[in-house]
Length: 260
Image (cartoon, rainbow, N blue to C red):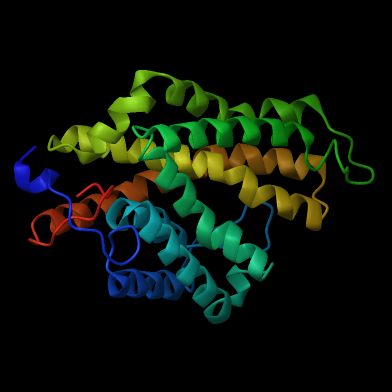
């Protein structure tokens, strides 16, 4: 890695990212909430393209800038595409912000605070899968089943194991920021895959509870997203890497903790 690549710009804006850059990226996120990419399993709406660019944000704006852009995009998206945000402000958090939060964590696990937060988030995700909403506060007539619980570990346990190893603790962040194209693709793909998988529970469980999903429907939803999230991670990687490469060649001072 060259000296130019490793030099970080002087702090400015938020987390080193220019305020205008954050605002423009947030506005793009909000506009992309109008574009559906695939339907919700269980019906009722679509996953918007803004989820892809929200997840990319922390890789190009740094964690703070990426999350702020996600907040801006989520608020805009709620107004321009209410069908994609049926829960209003709650969906601003769930659909608009949380993909950026999980991406920001997984791409920065080489930093001790981000690593600890990632481990804690994955453990809490696993516990909450067991507890909410089918054990507590429960959904009338829908007792928890072993089949449902058997479909949940894929969303958190493999990624917790990886995060606890040198692969997640050190290598994936290095691959994302390295100059080897193959390893960068692999690292970025893993960041998105782990981020989407961990994000899934927090995005889905409120819908299960609010709309009283039958246990069988929630189980089917889990099975469906074990396929959809890897596909989305591939799509997001294909979009993200050219953006990262363009920023590397742009001559702009890099943003701290961004991967370009």
